[in-house]
Length: 242
Image (cartoon, rainbow, N blue to C red; front, side):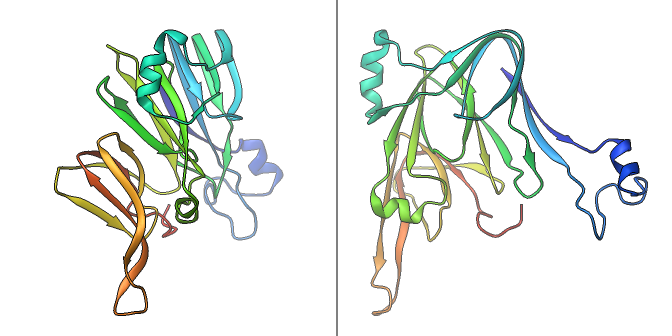
């Protein structure tokens, strides 16, 4: 499974019809919005992809489509995920191209590809999951009420694990740039905003009060991450830096 994030620009005819000089105002015009569009193209070669619900724009090639479901043979592995609800999503298999829904200016995403080994299980905010290879097991966990209040990316966690003996890939989409950091036993990550977008199974997550806000110091409710593993973090989330 390979993918490419494309930026589609208006045609020469569009510039002509709107009386805009493309040579001098290709990206910006003081009075008219120039409609650049972002779209993801996924290329399959005898492989498969699971995409976010409602994300398909079109697909072309020798492809079959269906709904992702957990195989009964994997029930023991499924139980180890400790998820609460099965995750149903479109899956496409074969050879060809799958195109996701285009996004207009102001809604562009930063895409991050994460390779998942068979020893790892990742959990992501449901709002940032975009697509993954089909050799995975998926499930969902509902956030606690106070966690929902502190999260900017949805009400669920999507848990993803590669099938035994295989490596999988998942691609996330966020409004700000992300990177992967690693913490070790005895280290702690504390953030007063939705800093962490995903983490591996060795990490314990909590959303709790830090001190007593307004009474002798403290930060109110903060996100706390402890344990050992990897985290997907967004240092610029909420800053509007793109």
